[in-house]
Image 1: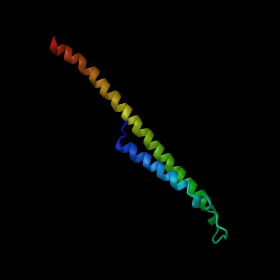
Image 2 (image 1 turned 90 degrees about the vertical axis):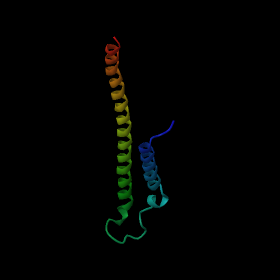
Image 3 (image 1 turned 180 degrees about the horizontal axis):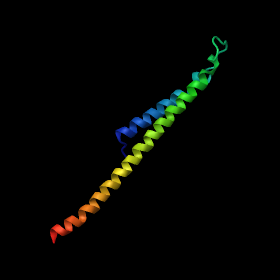
Length: 91
């Protein structure tokens, strides 16, 4: 099954964010020496940032799938509406 370009881009974005979130350096973001206040919370900041992007790409993927389904339904309805017109034209 071939994926559309939009789906490929969405999947690539999700995989990129997940790869960044799983980097060992990000997991060990707490510094040994605390230089500035709040510096030890950078790991949590990055994790929250990554989760927001994952949620965004998941939502974009969901919306693209839903849009595709709606387009198929619209095309099916157009075909159903066109059938009676073809029958009356042939009679």
